[in-house]
Length: 610
Image 1 (spheres, one colour):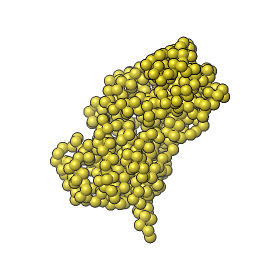
Image 2 (cartoon, one colour; image 1 turned 30 degrees about the horizontal axis):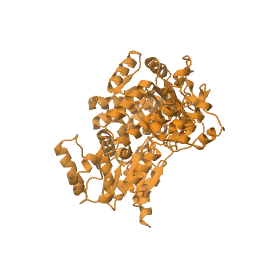
Image 3 (cartoon, helix red, strand yellow; image 1 turned 120 degrees about the vertical axis):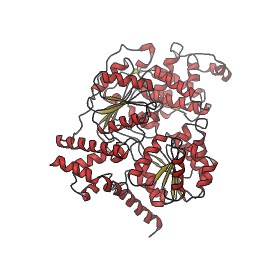
Image 4 (cartoon, one colour; image 1 turned 90 degrees about the vertical axis):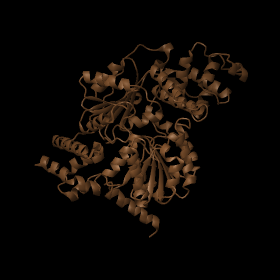
């Protein structure tokens, strides 16, 4: 039998006996096979689709040592702990551990006992560490959250950029780069920098059709927060806030109004964070109020809503955060409140991040894309998916499909924008185009002779701010492409050329323009459809299993979901296994977990059944 076929069979054995799964999920198997066949892999899979197994399975099949590079200490520690619970020899060497602990961990690595070693790029890319690793049997190198290479830039974490040297240092070792979100520019960047173009690219579809998308302009943020949560009473969800301070304020506010809310942010003590996370995994109807520190690696299947009380940082961040909802495939809702102050704060964050000019400009353009999404005139999902290079029709499950807004004809303004973009060579950004439309004879406009164009001065009565919104909506409606990779230049699409030639119509949302804001009218609230529920008996059993899981997690000093995910507990509720053989068939029960946890869970199930 050829070697790779043997490897592929072994991968299924590891999947079942170590991780407890009968089948690979979409996108996993192709990546596993490619790595076992010695090829490089760039894998882009949405949050919750099981990226980690794409490298953990081949790591155990191939033997030797697998090095995993990850940007976050907490994420590394969580993955190592979860692997150990499943019986896998995994280690992390990092700055939060004591020197003797790191020395002991390295001893286990150097003797061949460890199968997966997790490190931050700063720890890995030292000459001493690289020299030591070159003496070992390295079978695989994994770069997790690989979009950081492109998006964070060399001035922020230079060692991430330095990872590009790994292919030269370990020429025979396949490299896997994984991320949950990457637009086309980031994909191209990663492929070029990490692999010089030589890698299998696996992209799993980005659509999560069960998540209803909606956005509201901030008017009375606290009232809007309560109105939304009152529609989701008794459901588990996450409220994301911009700052630690606001996280604490919102938690207190919700608690005062009868909601069971817990905070989660990086300024809290680690044990308090773990306690709140375990409670969220275990108790029904809890609301976590969090900064983006929350959610990495979380696998809670029944999160029914995500509410952004403040605007996230980019389309990628937004997509990743809403992806924590509805992992059980049932109806969920992602709602965002956004205001001008959010945009100002986000711009300030980018400026304070000490990025080089090119990366700073790119982040501003990414933020522009998110603002365009907020101001979208029609189907949000179509715009969100198109940002990630996926085409779709109207989704029927966002606020703009379910309750279309009143649009105003902006064909004249659209043609004026298109004319200015076309006659300037389709390479200038929004600011320059607005100067032309408003007749501002800046040095740049005069030098280029753009004060002689037909579009010069045609829109003097429209403010800069309103032109900016019109251009964002023009991009969102597909008439223009925004060049995020370059300098934010605007280019006409086929649809844009048609409009310029007098074919088609541009409709925009007037409420985002100061000149014609309608009086505030309450839009009718979206009603999330009722979801199929477990029976009373099944709910009682599920609660009992969650309590047991929490007790065991405390005994083993791990987080609750590392014992079993919600998906596994729900599978137990449906199957009601009566013996070890039946328990082994439960989703997520591998050999080690069968040995460690079969007895207490079987006892709990028989108690409720009795």
